[in-house]
Image (cartoon, rainbow, N blue to C red; front, side, top):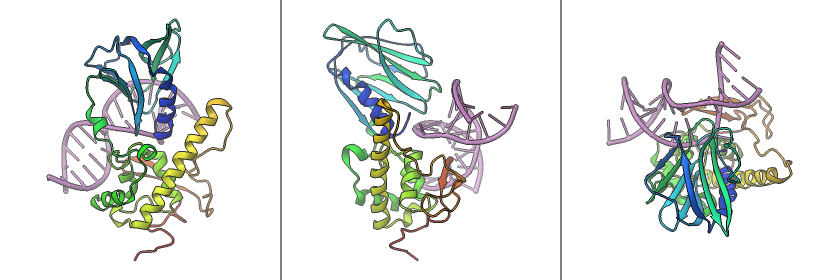
Length: 266
DNA sequence: CGGCATGTTGCGCA
DNA sequence: TTGCGCAACATGCC
């Protein structure tokens, strides 16, 4: 489930809980679930998201959730049996109607945290591309300070919250920039193109997920992720799969260069 | 059976 | 102190 567009879809799933009162919170999973606050009786004021984190703002305190690799939310009835891989159950009531929120997560890399205050992971997040836009000057300054490959830096949640492996792969392909390029060698134009491509990939993926929710059609939004060895949609060169910073990375050795096409640097 | 996976953290070493 | 490579986490899927 887990990059910005998918988490945004999860947020929309939870949005109807706004105004509801929590009647019970239950979990036996000490890995996924943590609570330092009794949320029973609290009212959900807002369902927010920043990057890959969800945050329910209560009249007192918060519920945070990160989907990890396999987390997800479903809304059901109180009498529905536990779902496969259900890790947390939260029941709420609004206008006399009960809704049961189930957090499922097979791999259990995700989190569900009830807390009286904001948590560090949330506070340390950088701007969210969808909520805050992309400040290119800031991104460039950040790139200049790091000594890693541009793709690794893009995955830093303090730079832009919500950018994950797929979005980084797709954006760099769209920008025609080699993912291994040191972030320090990025220039204004590179950042401009990366920002443009990130916005495009996020919007495209979101549209795809929205369509999938109802019908089930829509063009597959990924041009290179999952397409290693296939011809590059832009230049036809077979796409290559490498490991970069411990993450699988697909790119085109034919047209993804160490500089943007319009402004070669020496 | 082996390998890979949309994420994050932490450890050992240079 | 910083950077980096990797393992770990836990499980499903091809």
